[in-house]
Length: 192
Image (cartoon, rainbow, N blue to C red):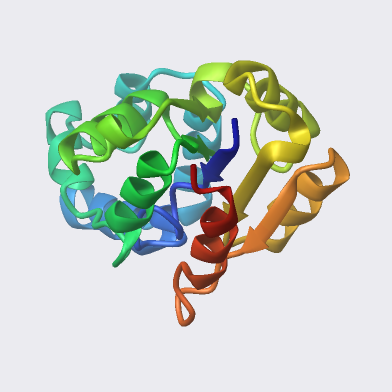
């Protein structure tokens, strides 16, 4: 079986850097904190599963009850649901591979209606390792049950694309100006 693996931020979701574009402004709005370095550091810990999401919110002086309001600021990239539907309709397994806080990623997938398109998700906060560390790609390969040569990984960050290629995974560097054309071309020959 072929396997399409999609990065979350910048590929599935429109915001490519949700920390800088959404999280830091949200925290500044809610708590007045503009210590970007402290926010980035706390986020890194949470995205590695070293601290809980609730502890993260405490660290940045924002009530954890506002988490869903923050998450509501995320939107899907145009064409992503059509792409995932096309892959599923053609018998291709669809996975999400993301550096994120596990609980946030789970809520986003459910709230934005993409969970049903996915066969699974590998989230850094759940597995304790972030892209571009090769270990996260190995976890993906093992979890997906797909042969490495049958996987296409789509990411918008060059360092993640390079690391994926180094473990033998075919990759597409996502460009929002072009959209999902390259990925659709990969799906077509694999149609059942």
